[in-house]
Image 1: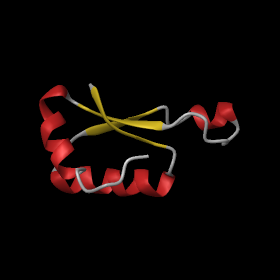
Image 2 (image 1 turned 30 degrees about the horizontal axis):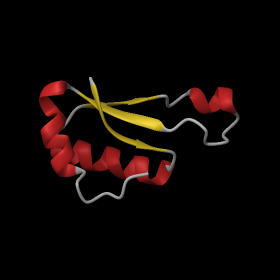
Image 3 (image 1 turned 180 degrees about the vertical axis):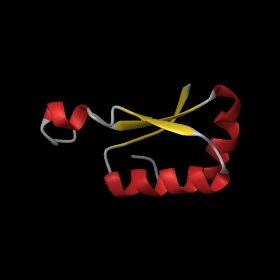
Length: 68
């Protein structure tokens, strides 16, 4: 799997998940549970991962979303 997006913003993450779901692109959110360890200080961004063969499609779907 390859990373296509990284963010600390949970609202933006939800929007990204919605966009990928609507496009039919399977994804995985890595580091989602690290917040329990870090105490919700936002030090570890969540990484959105897709299969290597879906990277280009995911990048097109997420092209208009501001990074960060």
